[in-house]
Structure formats: structure tokens, C-alpha cells
Length: 281
Length: 304
Ligand SMILES: Cc1cc2nc3c(=O)[nH]c(=O)nc-3n(C[C@H](O)[C@H](O)[C@H](O)COP(=O)(O)OP(=O)(O)OC[C@H]3O[C@@H](n4cnc5c(N)ncnc54)[C@H](O)[C@@H]3O)c2cc1C
Ligand SMILES: Cc1cc2nc3c(=O)[nH]c(=O)nc-3n(C[C@H](O)[C@H](O)[C@H](O)COP(=O)(O)O)c2cc1C
Ligand code: FES
Image 1 (tube, chains in turn purple, orange):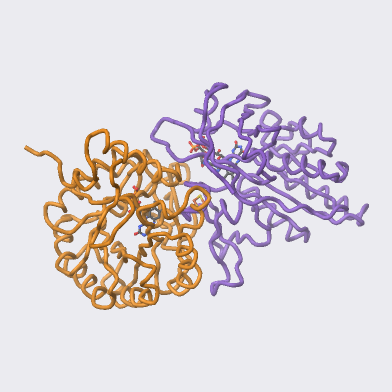
Image 2 (image 1 turned 60 degrees about the vertical axis):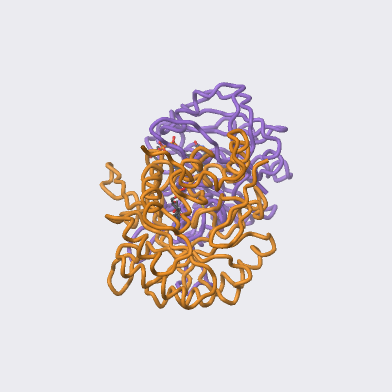
């Protein structure tokens, strides 16, 4: 169950690579939140922007929740100026969460850009639940080394971390899916004992590529989607994605990313019909 | 304490603050935040005869102090609404107003007639008249004769009182208001969204899959006020004011311009507690100004 809370900003600092780490005192949300959940922050901003802005829960720490964000536009830029002590209105915890895989799975986390936070949260929860960190492989994709986020912090969890950059300035060169494909190709030769299971989050074009990849490799995959979200708690029907639905006559229905999601099974998402691409933004 | 009890067309509402159609689903999600019986009324998402899938994404876009939407009337259809949604609303003792649409006068009538089976639960029907009539391609709310015919036909088929919800996308709102009054409407609600659009200058594509959409939010409040004011001069029907309402001052403005009650729409998205806060603040505002009921404000704007 979610609620509207007045949360105090504990800290709000620029960390590596233009990303900011925001810590909010929000005990109810901290207690309720699971990996994949998000919150809706109210940010006073210029240009008449007035929707709340959605952010994944990166981590919880006692009664605090942590958010990792990149300043992109008017809301996130305004947020960077919010000082500690300021009270912000926050709705949460919202949305569904990732399911946990079977214990002996080879867990592959595929994150692009600012899609890293829910995957980091998942990795942390899995380790807390005694999953073997060596079975967790986190592919962190970005344009270049200067835009990759939360790489070291992820490595500190003791999991396998791989940087993938489009310009090759760090780690594997290419799209994050290229890195994952190399890994899957190598794995099928060596360790067939561990069934791969994938979790993904990032911009929609990346998720689309992940969707095509997992269907080619026949890997079970859950992905947290992005969408423009006027409300975030299911009352506007604005944030939908086209998803398979055997119960509807059309064979699909529009599902709310904020309510039935943000986490969906990759094979439930319809990326295109009759050559027309569906992107929810 | 002031008395917020409000009467519209012989029906009593706990207070004059309702939820607008399409901005509260069927009430389910809002029970996380408050009890539905605290509201004046809840107006459901538009219900049609058959379920509708709605438009593909993108369906929404944020504009200056407003937003565009083209949801495409995604809804479960009247049968499923009655079997799956009404029991929930009944259990939560929601004052239920059902918003209805159709592609023809006959379709509006068939949805309304189907609702007769739950007439104990449905206190009013609100006709979403911003829908295109398949026969003429014109919205019901655009042509006085069509608007009047629609209301008359629905009134014949149901004992449930009828609200005509008007579109602002017309050249003369009073013409339509008069027509639906003649058609026998029990009340008016206004305004629905204004037609608008936005374009992505990087991709040269419209921001909405439907190209155009409906503008709502604080940006449209002045338009709504002017239309409520003008309609209130032209008809005797009670008017339910809608458009950009966020706080108690907005509500007072609408009442002074002639509204008997209001509906909160887009503001629910930003703060679901908005209707609760408004009712609370309205009580305090009236008390402080020495009024005993919001009805004392209706149409009391002072024009020289
Ligand atoms: C469930 C969910 C979880 C998210 N988690 C995070 C997170 O943990 N960290 C983070 O930095 N960002 C996250 N985002 C994206 C974040 O919400 C957007 O970056 C933010 O809303 C942009 O607001 P703005 O006012 O700065 O940008 P605007 O000025 O509104 O727009 C600037 C640019 O950002 C893009 N944008 C706007 N809204 C969104 C959105 N909802 N999703 C994706 N792109 C958007 C626009 O297309 C535009 O190009 C998440 C989004 C969703 C839906
Ligand atoms: C996302 C969204 C969906 C809407 N859906 C409907 C609808 O199904 N039927 C209807 O009559 N009005 C619908 N409306 C219009 C509102 O009920 C209201 O008339 C309008 O938004 C103006 O009020 P506001 O500025 O307070 O939002 C919708 C509005 C929005 C923003
Ligand atoms: S953002 Fe409103 S329904 Fe999802």
C-alpha cells in the first residue's frame, strides 16, 4: 500500500559522472519497498512543469530511501538544487517488483544509463537473501566511461561487474546487449548447469534490443520499463505499454507501466505490429 | 462548522467536491489514500457498450501548467463495469456517477439502459458529449440539435438523473447549454478538455500517437470559468464546474461564476489528496468568511 509522505532530504550530492545521490527520510516507503519499486517526487520547477517525476528506489538504509538520478531536464535539474533539510512530497512505494530466481540460476543484470538503480537494488536484495554473489553478473552500459554510473558501488557487492561502452572508452566496446551476447555465447560452451535468468532496465530502445536478444537466446527475462507518468499510481491510463493478453479479443491490451509494471516479462511486451514500432515515450 | 452538504437535481451530496471522469479510474487505486465515501461523488472513467482498448502510446504529454491526453476511452465496457467495478464501489459507499459515451444516440441509450439494473448504486449518469457521432463525424456536443436529441433520448430510457458534460470546443457554449436544457438534462458539467497538440522538434513527430489530444490542468481554468459564467447566465440548470481546479480558491471562483459543485481532474495525478484538502479548506474558508453553506456563493460574482 502506498501513501503520500512528507520526506526530509538527508543528503543530495553529486557523485561520479554527473549522477546525483538523493537520500530521503521516508520510513514507511523504506519498509515497503522491493527491488523494481519506484517513487513519485514532487519538484517545483520552471516552465510550468507540474507532474511529479518518477525515480526507482536504489537502496534503503534504515528509515531512509536512496535515489540515484541524472539531471536531464527541468525537473531533475531543479532537484539538484534541493538542500538537505528541505521537505519534499513523495508518493510510494509504487509499482510491482522483480521476482526472485531459483537459487542456482546464473543471474544476468542488464542495465543501460540510468536503468542501473533497480538492478543494483535487486542485486543487494539477492545477496541479503543468501544468493551467491559469484552467480550474479551485472552488465552496466553507457555511451562512454564518463557517463557510466554506480559501477564501483556495484562491484563492492562482490558480484561480477562488466562495463560496456559504446565508444569503447571503458570495458567492452558496443551496446550493452553486445556485452551480454558475448557472455551468453561463452557460457553455453562452459557452464550449462546454471540456467541463465535476466533482469533488465534502461531506455526503451535498449530494452527492445534486450527483448529481441532474450527471445533469440531463449532466456527468461524480466524488465523494468520507462514511461511518461502523469500520476504513477494507476488513475490516468497514460503510461501504458502494449502487452500480450490472451484474455482480450485483440490478443493484447494496454497495461499500465506504473501499476501492472514497471516490471514485465520480456516476452509479454509487444515491440512492434505490422512493422510499426511501439515506443512508450 | 459550515455545512458542506450540496444538493444537485434533488440528490444530496456530502460536499461539492467530486472526482472528474478519467482522472480516478473506478476508484480502486484511490482507496490507498482515503475513503471514497469522503467525496461528494466519484465520476467514473467513461463507460461504453463494448470494452475499448484505447489508443497506443504515447498517450500523454506535459505542457506549460497543463497536459495533453489521448487515452482513447480505454474502459472495461458496461457489462464488466457492472459485474466487477460496481460491487467494489458499493462496498466503499461511494456516491457513484457513471460517465457514459457511445458512437451513436442508440449506443448511449443502450449503455444507460443497462445501468438501470444498478440504479440503486448509480446516483447520476454523466453524458460525455465530446465523442464523435459515427454517422456525422461531429461531436455530440458541437451541434445543438444533436446535443438536445441525445439528452432527450437518454432521459426517455432511464429514471437516473442525467448530467450533460459539455465540450469547450465550440463557438458558442450557451447555444449548447440551452439545447441540453431543452432536451431535459438535470444538470450540466463543464468543461471537458480543449483540443490541443505538441510536436517533438527533434523527430518532427507529434507527441501523441493520436496526433491531437485534450488539454487539461491549471492552464485551462480561465477558459472553464468563462464558460461556466456564460452558461450560468443562459440556463437555470445547476452547473458542475471542471477545469484546472487545485485548491479551495479555485473552487470559490467557480462557485462565484455560477457552479453548484466542482470536479477535480488532473490535480489528482499530482496529489491524490487534493479533493480531501479542498473539502477541509472549504469548510474553514466559509467559516472564516461568515458563510454557512457553499450554496451562498453560487453565482454571487459582482459585476457592475
Ligand atoms: C519507473 C521509472 C523509474 C525511473 N527511475 C529513475 C532513476 O532511478 N533515476 C533517474 O535518473 N531517472 C529515472 N527515471 C527517469 C526520470 O523519471 C526522468 O529522467 C525524469 O522524469 C525527467 O524529468 P525532467 O523534468 O528532468 O525532464 P523533462 O524536462 O521532463 O524531459 C527531459 C528529457 O527526459 C525525458 N524524460 C522525461 N520523463 C521521462 C520518464 N518518465 N522516463 C524516461 N525519460 C523521461 C524526456 O523525454 C526528455 O528527453 C525513471 C522513470 C520511470 C518511469
Ligand atoms: C487523462 C485524462 C483522461 C480523461 N478521460 C475522460 C473521460 O474518459 N471522460 C470524460 O468525460 N472526461 C475525461 N477527461 C476530462 C476530465 O474529466 C476533465 O473534464 C478535464 O480534464 C478538465 O479538468 P481538469 O483540468 O481538472 O483536469 C479526462 C482527462 C484527463 C486528464
Ligand atoms: S501514470 Fe497514471 S496510470 Fe500510470
